[in-house]
Length: 320
Image (cartoon, rainbow, N blue to C red; front, side, top):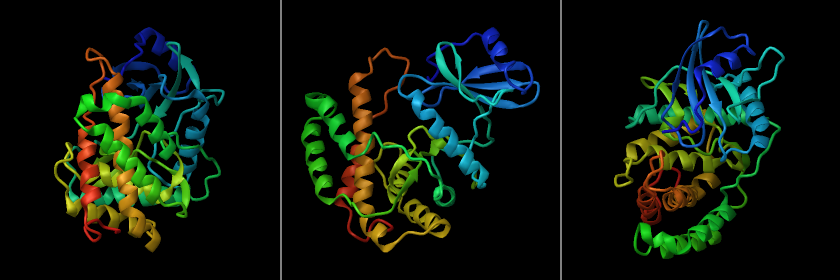
C-alpha cells in the first residue's frame, strides 16, 4: 500500500478550489509505489494524480523534478507535468505534507513485458536522454557508489539474516566495482528507476514515463543498465530473457545511440545497477517492521541478477 497520509474528501475538495480543474467527483488511493502517497482524482473536468511527498523525498528537490518534467514535456516526451494553481504555484501543502497536482497519463504498466514492449521502453529511454541533453539542471545521485557503501555499512551484520554469506558477497562486489567502475563515460540527467511499473503502455506503445523522483546526474549509460536489470529478468531474478535484453539495447541504440566505450562498460554498469537495488531492498527488508503496511520486496531477486551479470560471458549481454 502506498497511501501513508490519509486526506479526507472534504479537504481534497477545498484543495482543488485553488486550481482551474473543476470540482472533485471522486478520489481513490493508489496502492502501487512505496515512496509517496498517491491519489487518483477525478473532477468534473478530467483526471489527475494528487501526490503527497513523504519523508524519503526531500522537498528542496521538488523544483528540480518540476523543471525537468517541464523541459522533457516541451520536447515531446510523454511525461506527467506538474500543474500550477491559479497563481502559478505548483508546490502546495496538504495533510501536513508537501503536495502537488500532476497530469494523468493513460496506459497500464506491464508485469511480464514482451520483447516488443521492452524495445519500446528502450526507445522511450533514448528519446528521454535526447530531450534531456540540453537540460541545465543537475542533482547529485544519493545512490551512487558512495551511497552503496553507506547502505552496506548501515546493514552490517544484518545482511546475513536475509541469506547466509550475503554480507561477504556484498563486500566483495563493492570492492570489484570500486576497481572496475568506469569514470570517463558521458554524464547527464537520468531517470535512474525505469522499472516496468514506471512505464505506461497501450499494447506495444509507450504512453508515459512516470515517477522521476530518483532522477539525478550520473553516467548516462547507467540508466540503460538500470532498465536492463528491471525489464530483462523474471521478477524473482531466476531467469534472464535474452530476447528482451537484445530488444532493449536495440531500441535505445536506434533512438539515441550507444558508443563503443559504453558497450564495453555495460556489464560493469549492470552489476552496479543490480547491487544498487539489492542494497536498497536489503535496507528496507531489515528496517521495515513485519506488520508495516508496505510490502517488503525480496532483495535476493537482485542478488540473482547480480550473480548472472558477474558470471556472464563477454558476448552474452548486448553491449558487451
